[in-house]
Image (cartoon, rainbow, N blue to C red; front, side):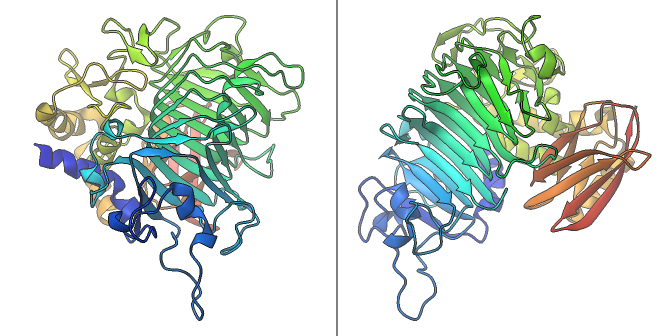
Length: 510
């Protein structure tokens, strides 16, 4: 059984590690300290990201030990001071801005220091990799080219960001943040923006959080206790925000949970908990031409349904969210009687609408463990399907030896069980074999997720109505999703990659 589990984990990260080099970091360094192996591990993460530490030999154009885009960095347990990839006005060999020449790296923490592959990593919390900013900015991903940066950040504790600083600052970058604890920062948990601002266009920087716990952050010098955003997407899956605060009023607005100050932003909140933060509302600066859109489902959100809350203005309630105590025992940990336990079944997730075995297995790998490194899924005997607890922690979980229940459900229950016909399955299988992008479902109701998978890198999704009017224009990356138009009708969905239309699909909203 465990061999199968390793296979699932491998599927998730196979793409990120294919044709890339692994670099190694160990506290204080080892051997040559050039990051080429655990025996020669770099002394800290920032050392590895600083070009001047890797001089270029005469006659060469690069130092082969310096990380390239799409490389992977394994970080052993220990404490490090920051992770900055500030690629603005910076070229190789000139790190005057303490930046770097790369903007697409995959960071994985929690190693012991002798593993040769990601699937050998133990529970990351057993030997945590801690980013302690000591009053500065902790994690900073920024690129001068919009949406050029692409980062995976998995298995870290992030703490120590100072006043008017951030635990995460994400600019012109798409960041996938998973199995991370953000706690005890004096500053803001998340700042995300896209430069320059595009007030009338759907062009975003993106932060996607899965299995993340955010708590006890003070927000000193900031107007929001969770996120300050401009022209961005913030996707939150199985994430908990609790006991966060802030203290600075901007432009006369009251303090808030989310603060939007420029451009157009979109938030997705699925199976998450936002509770007991000092301020629970959404604040939108009056200068914004296009207000934010927030989708939430199967989540516990304090103040999300009261008449005075901006959640009623900007939040799209897709069902099953609640304003009730999640019953924490401490920090983000749930009591056994918590209503968050089993709050969602697997079909509540937008990603799971894409009913192909290939894609589902990737998703099972991704949602495989909660923030504590424990099995993510539970099992509902009445419904006969997998369940998930809301928030970062999974209390109700099946034994790993019983994981075949989920496989049985995928293979024999869900796929043939009326969600798609045999002919549709055959069509999908043909598309997978041809390695062409897949868009599913194509017949749906308003504001239902449309899943797009099988595309590498970044691409634009445009949706036109029957009169040829553009109704959706959204930047996406890799396996992603958009929401169907709000009005019924027939639409044309067009995928554009590298400036060229690559795929077209008719969408029927009924």
